[in-house]
Length: 299
Image (cartoon, rainbow, N blue to C red; front, side, top):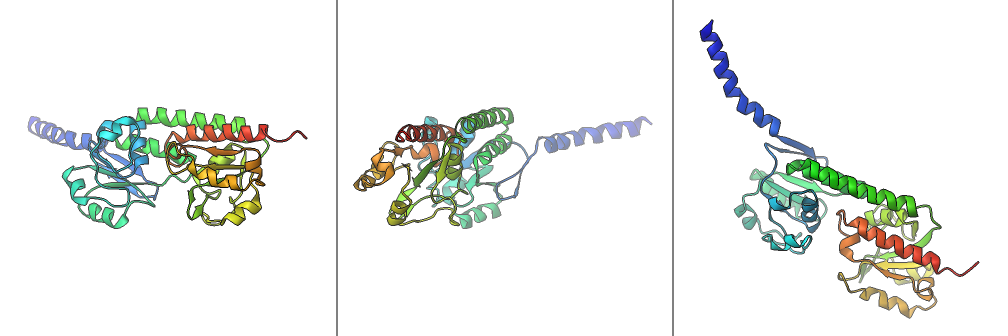
């Protein structure tokens, strides 16, 4: 039946491109538990937060970013990417002009109403909200798959996990140091143990003074901090090289942290941005708490 065989060959040939397209498709589950489906790895990505821009570069897909937001400043090539607004206020017209095939958003920070409008226009949105250090590695792996760079992303995720594991082995079981971590000064803000920074404090052998608070970002008054008498005070400050927020604490000379000069600064991009560089910030934090232990009076 040569005619039938010919028909099958033609049919098979017609189906091959469809089968290849299905095989090249990508499906991942984002941090909100939503499935993100792409017909093929993303070629034109708009990243709507600094941390996602940095994660994409770490995953080997920086060259696929066609738009990002203000304050996306690392690595240096990120500064050359066109801007589409801020993390909180997006220029939807500009985003559409860039013709992205994938948007990366921050679940608790990006404007959800604007993103829902873009989704109704057919754009795929991946929401990131890493709740812990393991979540950073998970985001790396997912972004690598979405951008067609799974091997690069896997290597970056494993390197990050190895750094965190080394810090935990070397510091988590050291004598505890009571810590007040200052996120903001007016109003005074800190973090509880459910926050990623709280996890970094624990892996360094620190005890977060406000770790048991129900709010993720508690707002203790200054009197509560003075009463808790932390052994160390750590801040990210208002900028990368301006530890200004530590100075007012020096007025309280009776504080243990002040008496022992345990006032420490960690650049906010290293500890407050959910990227692999948090391993560098955690290392700085661990070294600071080791110094606080060394400054304890002899028994």
